[in-house]
Length: 214
Image (cartoon, rainbow, N blue to C red; front, top):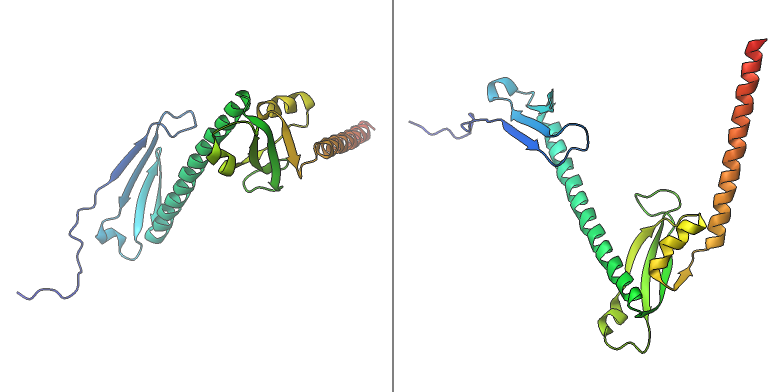
């Protein structure tokens, strides 16, 4: 019997994958349930469909779209893992700095704005380069004195009492390229503009209602 020179039959049994994620849902549903299965060869033909069922809602994707979905899930999951890693590192560095401040090791902390429009954040958030300056008489910490610094996106509140609470853990702070007074003035102007716009809208509504009464 001659051996076929090209493969023409799928001999692997197509099985359905059932996935249940108990810790992922942020909705009222306790679990996220997904069912995935490629169509058997006789049914797929040129359609190349993959069957999905997501929490009871079923749909079909052709193979190209299903492949793209898989790639994008991997891509965004990788980004999520990296973001989680970096935020935990940031928390660690911040706690270390605050502890040094409480221990009286730090003369001042220099907060330098390096990006006024950091990616993934809204208006008023700034990316700061944070660098402590140790007291000269402090011995040890040679590596930290030479190399310790990190970056952090911070939104400083325009309200003075909240701002003081935010800045207090940093101790003596020196801002570079951040004008606190200008930030407050900008916020106050935005509030004034919002109040004026709101008053105009209310006046229009009153005029409309009066017109309807005539």
